[in-house]
Amino acid sequence: MVNFGNVLQGYLAATQQMLSGDQLNNTKMAITTYTLPTLPYAYDALEPYISREIMTLHHEKHHQAYVTNLNAALQAHVAAVTAGDIASQIALQASIKFNGGGHINHSLFWLNLSPSDAPETKPDAAPSLQTEIEKTWGTLDAFKKAFSATLLALQGSGWGWLVKEGASLRIITTKDQDPVVGGEIPVLGVDMWEHAYYLQYLNGKAAYVENIWNVINWKTAEERFLGTGESILEAPNGSI
View (cartoon, rainbow, N blue to C red):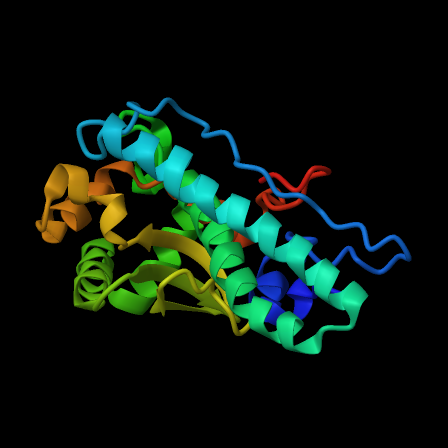
């Protein structure tokens, strides 16, 4: 039985069980099939800061690959459970974690972004979060500087996150496609894989980090901070 409650326990707790991957507890071993979420904006809506070319490739190819591979891994896991093949069940956990994490992280990331002229990209759209940021870092600019420095210090592929843990805010990173775990709530995340910026910025990831602040959706971050957002990973067909 595929148990996302074990594989992604911390994330599930932080997102109020938004991902229902553990749906294999009936005799037919039915599982959820996950699908690529539709973006809430056009592929060119984040220009000039993130190009249409990047968004198209990132969403249609990279995110779709995580979804496809996650579904394949879940199906293979069901077959392994049915056959009593414990070795295969164990071996598949890495693929489930990697591709499930990729699906989760990107689904969160798309909603972290908004066209630069939208009111959601103004920090005033997150008054409660901004107040807590100022308590922790002194000013919003100081937070941005600290967050950006963390992103640029990340070696290899991974993600930078602003997370809420209890009543506190922290900046953390996760490697590859690891999702946020440990009971922390992902408030804001930035993809630092090369596929997120290379076609436009080449090796100039500092410019990517500087420019992404122009398209951050502060309204979504506020909702995650307050716990008032909808459960984005809960849908009948496993889409986001």
